[in-house]
Image (spheres, rainbow over the protein chains, first blue to last red):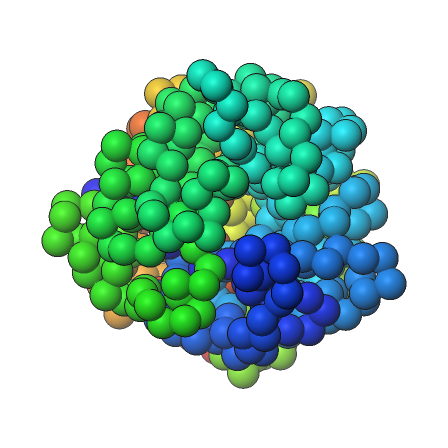
Length: 253
Length: 201
């Protein structure tokens, strides 16, 4: 009996539709967020993440309405983010039904945002997203969808955000994202062993073996993926059975 | 039976509301002493900082009506911080006084494990439980906290372990509380809420 490893589908949302990017050019429509949320809730997902990939001010009300519709479908925790720049933005997504808020670029630009959110909602509600890219012997923290380097070291940044009040780290490997060649195990292990909070690994998943690897060698507490679940390349139920057969504790669907 | 959610301005009130709606149960929010005094069944949700919950109870003058309600037998369900509030105090805000309905202090989970204790974990039954009736002993429920009550007692009907063993479910007469989030715990969580509603009926 111990804490189960979590499987987390991610919905990248543009307004009121789930989309997926093809090499950052052109977006493909994947479906209705509430319908997908209901499906994942029933299939045994442990949590759900909804990200506003456009994150434009004028489409904010549409995204908040999407959160409301998604939350109504879920009996599991919901994390929402994308374009969270202020405490007010955080209040809006929590008010719409998110249990946790994920922040990325804005936290790099103004780290106090992490403390402000943590004081108001508690550390358990603040998920700091780190997009990391290998550079020589370390990993750089990237922003603006992985396109721009901040020059910060990912491990140093991860430790710092925990002291500011982040309760969880959503770690995406920019090198692996979209490649379906497996999670970045070295990156995940490096961050997970250095911070006291749970780490969600993201980027590169395709096969069930990739998940086994990230939970064992990678020491991840949770693993996130998007298109392999949307496209039914991988079913959550059979993935969990595979993990159980490899002695990895998960919540049985 | 009308269910009253104690809305202290912090926490997961809306999530609990939605979970109850899924069960077909209408609830009302109480933000004033009068709202609590007239309640027939009370749920105290909470998530985040102990400080926020206890201060809100005092600032909104809800502490005494809540204690009176529990004292006169109104069915009560505390969730997460709503469980922790029942104890004498918490290490998270040592200057504050809890509701003192249960003996002992809430303390920090130990270092050496990932904190917050966040995710799905199993329960260890200590005695027969009305809240957990019909729920498989293997079931997982969702936790999100860094502090927990650890005092043993006959009222502790189930525990959980993360670094140390801590109180997961409390039942004492009309007073029930859970450290996990039934509103976020899938089917097992729905069953906990249904069991509580049965106690209210």
